[in-house]
Image 1 (cartoon, rainbow, N blue to C red):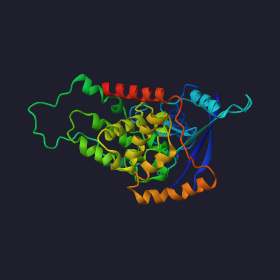
Image 2 (image 1 turned 180 degrees about the horizontal axis):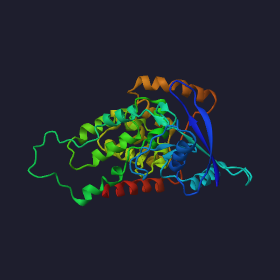
Image 3 (image 1 turned 30 degrees about the vertical axis):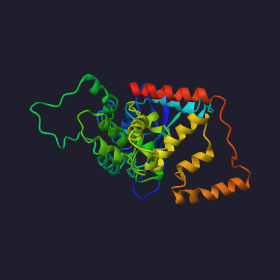
Image 4 (image 1 turned 90 degrees about the horizontal axis):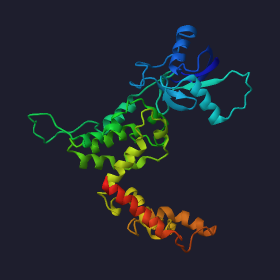
Length: 334
């Protein structure tokens, strides 16, 4: 079958251009196979990364049809089907299918599909992604773990540092201080590791508002593109739960946001917006600056008759409360 590969090519300090390559391929050929053929048969100047060709090293991560993925994992047939499913099939059977290939996002382009990953690695280093044994005496034998303790590290241990989650992270697009989902997924492994003795200090570091877990927008993109099912957003949530268990509402706005939301939903079945703003942003009149910050919004709502003057609890409040308690009970068993 013939396929047109639309490759987004770029050099530093220049605008990207689209270059088309026509290939006769099999549906089972991978995108990396196709890129290799383009380079070997049509254009030797095309630049991209590769290594193992077996979904182990993560080197060949790029954007394929608008999402980040491993070029050695995705094949031509599935990509054509994906594009038709996502965007609809409006073309006739005679038209040649197209696959668009682009460099990863949130990283500067070096050339074509090759990006500069220095910041990616720097952010990983910022969370100290290795077991701390400071303060321990060197043992006569190795540190031992039970099968259960080791199993807690299995999912995060699958991460191959391909950069797909980092590429799709919309929090990174607006907050350069955020360390990224890859780093926090590794951080969650350190928190769960029974050999590490620096958990409290780690959680304080990961609690930093613009750098740590609270900067995550919970968009779920990192989970959806991870080729190894690490689910970075879920790992970030696990760190949040560890922090929340150790913190009070008064400690920070991020902590109040989560705790107040749950308390109000338990009390009324849904959120009393008046109390939410007062307690989270105003910290019950203790944060004057926070109160002043939401005053203009409150005045506009009053002017447009959008301000809720009273609150009616949900008819299903008891059911909502019981669900929350059931979830917390299950979490306590883990």
